[in-house]
Image 1 (cartoon, rainbow, N blue to C red):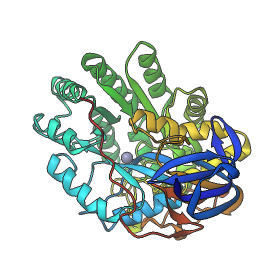
Image 2 (tube, rainbow, N blue to C red):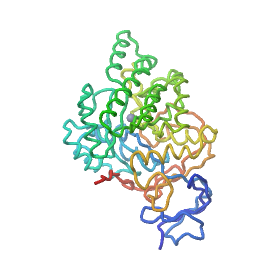
Image 3 (cartoon, protein in one colour):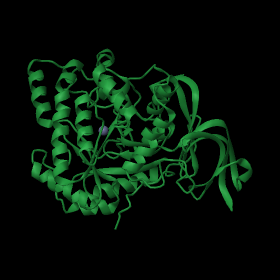
Length: 449
Ligand SMILES: [Zn+2]
């Protein structure tokens, strides 16, 4: 047996421990983890110089744009940012131009991605207008569906509960899951209209419009639809104590629900939003201390399943409008998520094992990505190597993403991704992309028959 590559002198997060070992890759899989003396012969070797090796991290919520929105980001720039941020796998969301909501738009997106991506990419699809198309989308390999509830994006009528239940049942019939952006359209629209009439157009008005109630209403409504359809449902970027409590309660009474939190909802407050301004505007917004504490509690006790960046890149000038209602909503997160969380590990607020659970094990489990999420022989050779003690300042001008802004700009962090391996190949090495476009793979959901 000859391995393609052996990584020596690594400190790997292996079975809830950090072990000194070497790791051999072959055919894109992990062949062996063990002592250097037990490694097979290899075509090439890399000395990791005792740096920390984690399973290839997974960001289950990103917007890679491309196609009609490629001025903001494309598959190459977005997956370069992923590799630079230590992510070996990302999941793309459907609010694209055209919206990913048919087997045709999905196939086209997969074809374009195949040629350009540096890391593995899976896709979520919005609901098609005709539910008969759900089967075609599933066959095309969507990792799951997405329902955006703050405004009309996909083919489902957001005001029609029965229609949504039917759609959920159809998706459940194929064993697929639904991810939801839970903000209630009607409550949001009403609040926005009032504020606009009052000529309020600053970030405080945005915060007021996207109130706690907007999230809770949507969460409660969706939970009711989940109970009546039996679908497996994932809540994106939970941001409030009340929303989280409702999800936890539903899970305790048997609903198949999971949820994620973003790093900005954990680490930025509504005061930060007022200080930073438009660059920090995102949906749902960052909130006050009470919610931040509840979210951290959820991260620590496991009621929040994972962390996802909600990487939502825009042009800088799209973030610079006079009125908050004209500002494009979203912030890039692929290149800040891991350093920010490693900083929390260094501070002692997060255990390394918790970080691995939040960024690898749980997203792999919930997305049903077999052979991903932990370092195990036979699993895919996706690895994230970090320098746990390297200090630096977040500098968005250095991002590989096209979106060169961040509400975290200037923040001192400790812990940096230094190498990212994808499918057995070194993709990103000390600040540079070292492979050609197309090294990553398009992930298609394996359909259980
Ligand atoms: Zn999003």
